[in-house]
Image (cartoon, rainbow, N blue to C red; front, side, top):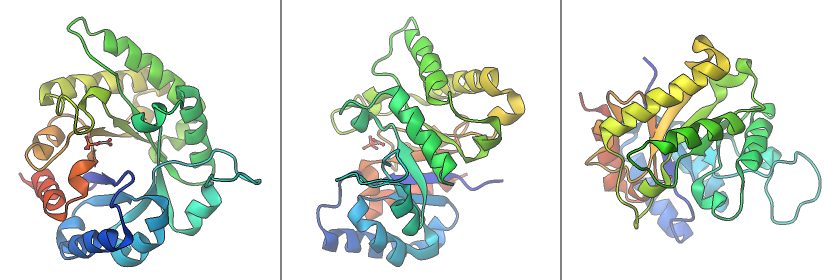
Length: 253
Ligand code: PGA
């Protein structure tokens, strides 16, 4: 069995280098625990070197975005060559906080294609803004997935990770995490969409994760029986104790 995937999306935290060092020192103390998972940390770019050096083999290095042009002068942007030179293997694309700045599904699809072309795994985020009892969000999710995956070749699906992140469930001001039953229903739907697009065998290669208000009290419930292969964690990844709780909860039988 593949290890459950745990992604720590640090966003633009911790607020200083010493705090980032502290967090890593504390995570490192639980290396034996984290080795049971496929742990991916996506720190702010200036901390990439630090995470690579301090966390070593316990962690797979990720980035929170990429600039989708491979070469050229682009002030303020960071492209795949630099990311790869730090040892980055995974890149989040299309997080809702970036989409709020104007990124469209078409932009995200391009970033996913560039990631694959350069040997990185794209972790493609998608999710509805709100839900209603009529289930209209399913239509939205279907259209969104079609666009996001439009340029991706069947043979590359083993590299693709999808993070279902309902926007209403993300962050401090949110309604809290999705109900586990609603999660399994949605993941089943996502798998059906993938199967329609790529055929069953290829569709099964895509690792689907869930993100949105995951913490130590709900991680196990959200992971088990929902059809996801892992979790993407924001706030709870910034506190070593909470993050350890998330890992324990994911591994509990
Ligand atoms: P949260 O963030 O865990 O703080 O809700 C998740 C995310 O934005 O990826």
